[in-house]
Image 1: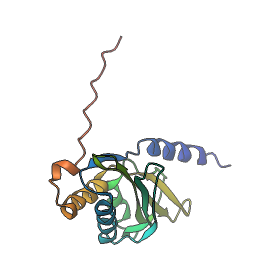
Image 2 (image 1 turned 60 degrees about the vertical axis):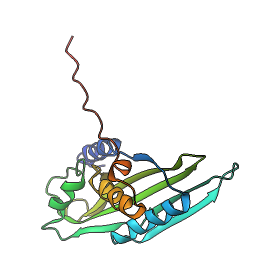
Image 3 (image 1 turned 90 degrees about the vertical axis):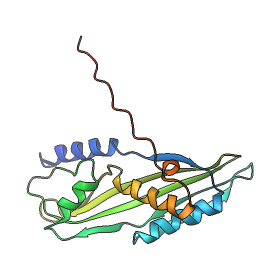
Length: 178
């Protein structure tokens, strides 16, 4: 294994740890939320790769919707610039030429007894590096694309934006050194 390969793997695993998933409860019925999530994803130009829902033992519905990899940008002149807007950190590859950038959305829905539907939404970014590694690399989203999808979901469900917008995480207080 080449010496440069190990740092590349370490870089990618650090970014993957930062991946966040948005979790919220929507005060709507499962079929409404299911249709709205599918519509919001397909409106972004993404085809659905997988969608399935079923009942659990208590009669409540749960399911998963996953999009195919949707190309956000094509072309080595603009791929890196565009993907930096949506990424925690693009993999560091010296001399890399990014040919494209993609996103894949995953939504997990679970009907709650009386509260509505729990939605967990995440996105994974990837891109083709066509010069040094000549491979597709995967990394974490910074949440911008997910928030846009949630905003559209609030419009489709007729909910105020505050209901669908997850609270921004509180900044961590820096601890004083010993």
